[in-house]
Amino acid sequence: MAERIAASASLLPSAASPSSSTRRATVASGLRLRPSPSRFSQAASRGRGVAGAAGVVPRLRVVRCMAASEAAQLKSAREDIKEILKTTYCHPILVRLGWHDSGTYDKNIEEWPQRGGADGSLRFDPELSHGANAGLTSALKLIQPIKDKYPGITYADLFQLASATAIEEAGGPKLPMKYGRVDITAPEQCPPEGRLPDAGPRLPAEHLREVFYRMGLDDKEIVALSGAHTLGRSRPDRSGWGKPETKYTKDGPGEPGGQSWTAEWLKFDNSYFKDIKEQRDQELLVLPTDAALFDDPSFKVYAEKYAEDQDAFFKDYAEAHAKLSNLGSKFDPPEGFSLDDDKGAVATEEKVVADPAPASDTNGAGPQPEPFVAAKYSYKKRELSDTMKQKIRAEYEGLGGSPNKPMKSNYFLNIMIVIAGLAFLTSLTGN
Image (tube, rainbow, N blue to C red; front, side):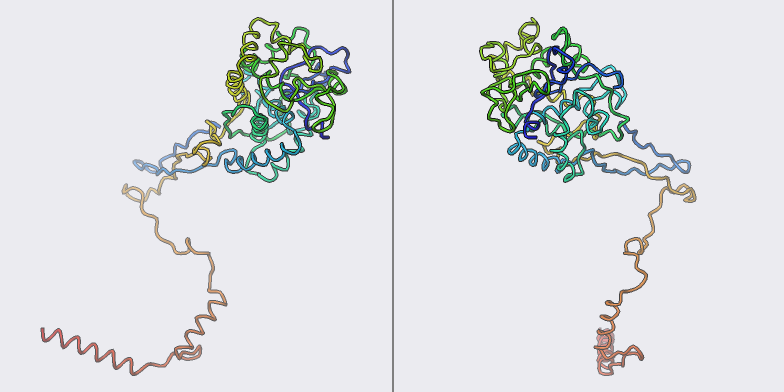
């Protein structure tokens, strides 16, 4: 269990495995790689309003509509994710969770959610059972309590929040994320199997381009995202790749074993590119798709740059990760919102809608003020409560009154009132 939490999965595929039993998804720090697919495998319009009587203009009012997720709950969920990372070392699998939810995007399909992408579909069994998503049940079990605790956020946002937080907490760059993603609502809306990278591409570089170009990503973004292999490790009994254990993994953290791409496989930096370039340490994993970054002339330009300049890698990675996390998403509000500015604090959208037109019996005088009705502002109780009745009765009896007879007149008070009235009239007459 601990290893499954700490296991990584790459957005990038591994090379062809030697047999069908090893054509399982490579465990890396991004998209889990799939075997060959089985055969069986708001743009809401603003209200325009309709006038009731001729010449009467409907009244407009502003309605505040809540976004898909609440910013305050997302911020709290982010803190809870940080605590989970401290105790379970699950950075790689949370990165993979977010990448797999968004990595099904197809830019050639316009309709949502048929186009795939970050829409929370990975929580449903039809997609979770895809070969490429093996093991992600562990990630869902980790974050489901957070979703239960904060019902005001969507799964689509939670998956991407977990992925971004894992990168940042591992020492990676601050990611320019936005939120407000809308969830799909039914398993039937899940994308078909086969959109994630294959485990055994015959031509690694060409396969990377085929998969990532379909998402609308370019060579620079492919290489930058590959750098997330700095997190995680692979196990031969699960993916068909890697050693059972190395000096870097034999003691964990988490369940010992597997082979990592870097010596410090829970630290996000540019060591992945350095180690691939040198290939001096036999304890570290290098897959055919990793080697392709330095073999392919176009990829090599960026791989060389990132091996020498970590700041450049961090900058390009942050942009690529944020772009990947938005693929295929439907946002509410449409522009999304950030958790790091004031606008994100109020995740609402103002819409102008038309009130119903007033009745036509106003003789063209326009809308009339609404009459005041006290009952509209009351609690709709038809009589006083027994407690209030007893209080009023006690005060009445204290003044000499009785429920069975009217209160006695106070003759002294009446005489004083008459004298005061006569004095006032006398004063007026004298003037």
